[in-house]
Image 1: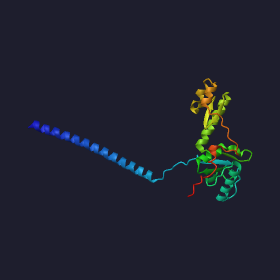
Image 2 (image 1 turned 120 degrees about the vertical axis):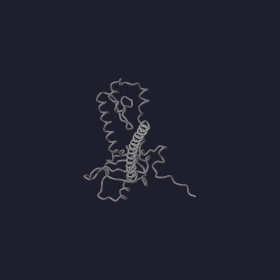
Image 3 (image 1 turned 180 degrees about the vertical axis):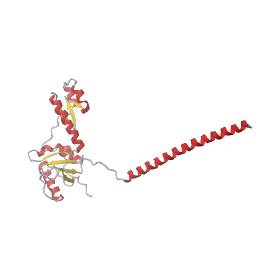
Image 4 (image 1 turned 30 degrees about the vertical axis):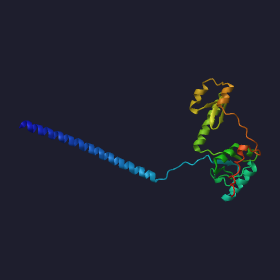
Length: 236
């Protein structure tokens, strides 16, 4: 009889331990459930907010030297730009200009003008033929945001540092070439310790050759379609 009582008592204690273990597991599951509810609530709040999409800067150019008139109407500015590019670069921008705005504070009458176009191809063409503006008092350049400007400044610093060491260095296509070799900024110090001399074959295969742009009044066959807004549609 005593043996049965001990057995039942032991079984009862074991069940109590199992129940306590189950209660602990239930408490853990409840905590995890509350955490999941908080995460779901946070995700629902994030999805309800509009997603910020960084604007593309590939369709923008910057025009320097253009006179700024107080409260100039947008249509008059667009017409002035179309006439300017037609006279200087023989390019018709009718329908290409999407938006314009001035850079910097309104402290001078000739702040740089950012011109946003609807075509990346037109931006590329204008930048390629930027020499057309020489001698006009105007200048066009690619648009650079803060990050791109910092990267460009860092490239220039490394460029000047390499030239001070007697190395031939240039920046082409937003990349640094030292002695004809593409050089990453984090590897610059290591590269300068190597033999700086390379043969002509290595130079020709690692560094792009100089590109001579055609005169402004000459348009190549590949670019004949680029200085008009749209191709004419066939009439029925």
